Length: 196
Image 1 (cartoon, rainbow, N blue to C red):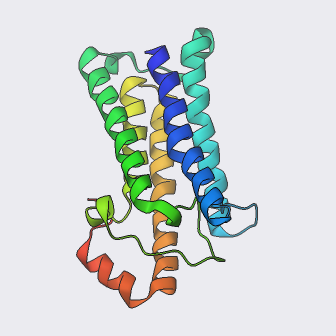
Image 2: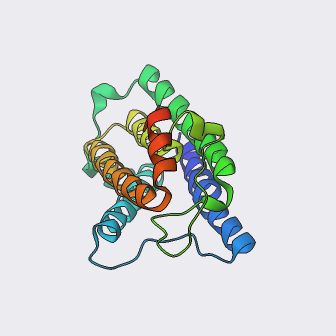
């Protein structure tokens, strides 16, 4: 499990976040990382989400290398069983595959945050025909899978805080996409659900 989670983190954040960002930057010259440090709601949510993702990494590192420290994260022993662990691993695997496929469908429109400077194409193909937010949906599933694999007070807090921040970010992006794409986005909203 330790090796699985460490490799998983490298794959999820390497292939699903860093590689697509690099690809967009190399093909368009646009830095897709749009989370700043201003006092705006967008940047504030971005800061909290970065802390949440950092917390995910810390929990996995504590589990893998610092078992004494991991005990301070208050493991929930009665949820530690083979069935929930298997469900969690399955959700983690589905989440990373789902996010990687969504990344391919997003192509040059990929951004981390809201890009006020460069108008991107409104992606409505591939997984975006099923969900308006497939990458965020994958991240929600990933957080749930992590909790089931490593049930603890810490991963429960990460699950709830991460989900709340994703819900807020999605709504900020919906407002932005409505301003940017107008009727095309409103029509898309009527055709495709927010999640699935």
